[in-house]
Length: 133
Image 1 (cartoon, rainbow, N blue to C red):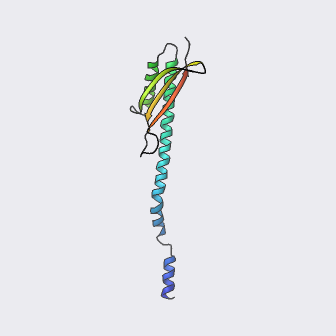
Image 2 (cartoon, rainbow, N blue to C red; image 1 turned 60 degrees about the vertical axis):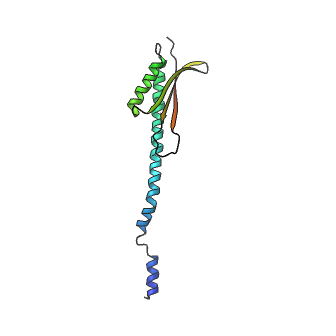
Image 3 (cartoon, one colour; image 1 turned 30 degrees about the vertical axis):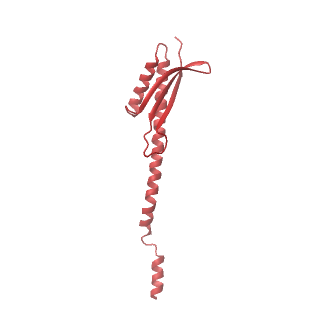
């Protein structure tokens, strides 16, 4: 074989391509995986906040209970579920939905996100019908 043919075969050879492809694809794959983990974490926090607000509203809606009881119960559930500093504010109030008296508990919390993408705060509400007693 001539030297020109050997040189052309060497240029077409795929040896070493896997390392380069791995180096190019790995950062993109890592970013996608971290983004999925962030979305899952945000959805988990939102779900936990909603459940805590609903639990607090149910506690405040019991006959003979007060709004302070609902706020305290909401904070207890949040402390157990995601830690003490998660909620920046918890507020309970009386409201009417379709002429039915309800207790509304509103929770504002920080989202544990990396980077500056997405909302910084998340606001959720829980409602419960007031018991007559």
